[in-house]
Image (tube, rainbow, N blue to C red; front, side, top):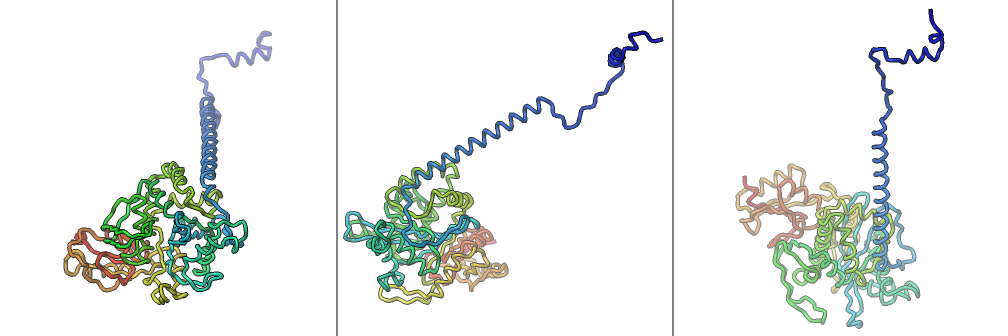
Length: 460
């Protein structure tokens, strides 16, 4: 018989909950996180949010400082209708090396160097195309004359050509860009000019650059600022150069020609890129204020360096750029052989110029470069060059008959990229375990794009 205590429902529930000595299994609900784990995730989320905010602030601060630093270098494009440049597309920048002597204004101002720089953000590559300053063109309001006259003409007649608000620098850059664009049949989106002091200052700000001089250079008539001349010499091999020395190396031309000078100028540009890249992303960022200080008053550009897509695009290219992969092209007798000389002017075959431009715009590759290669025996072992030539031909390269090198005691194989075929040169260097140099080897008059000089390291 049950008493009143048992009949109370509340008491019955309490008794069922009472300990009976039996083991009770309590199942944990799947997916339920413990308070400790939930607190840990909250802390991680807060840390991630805080890190993201700090990173955004740092990026914004860097961008603001960068935009403020480059602002003095940027000038408006004086051309009425410059080519459009949608974000994310490749751009062509005309780089003008200016010869100006403030102490001698009667000498005027002229362009000493004309190089088109192509920046391809999608392909993540850079290519250079040099134009000889003695190239004959039809200049606006002038007629047939040298292409380097365009900058000086635009500088002197800036207001007449482009309006009252146009400065001489803007006028010179605008007419040079128009003239080069017409000659190459290529849109010149932006222009940048730098004088000799700025060029040397950039290299000094880097602490110098390393240049691998391909052959001995002797110039007995290098021009000096006081209109005199001096003898300069460069021995072959890698060497460290400060700004003044690198400027002489880039400008000297009496030892060979203006075409050799164009090759050296591109070599120095590559050395500058190599020097910046060697510092890594953080080192490059820290270097920027010093570089911009060196450029202040010596450089001007229409490139909108403060535009976010331009900054991001250039940064994207720079972080993955191999200086050895920079495309190097030039209009020269070896790339456009059917030229004519009219006095000191050079008249190029338009069809051959278009072919050079086509190569300049194409994505470099062993197939597209179609380089002609010659193997020279520098190891003194009979039959070595013929054997290696056969192996390269079997691998798909275009090889001309082998020959002997001027020396037979070369210790290490070297690939000489003569006409700017970087993809082929890198492929050959990888196959042969060789070093790469620009220009021909000493004592060789090249008739091909690439020369391979075999060394003792190829003797098996």
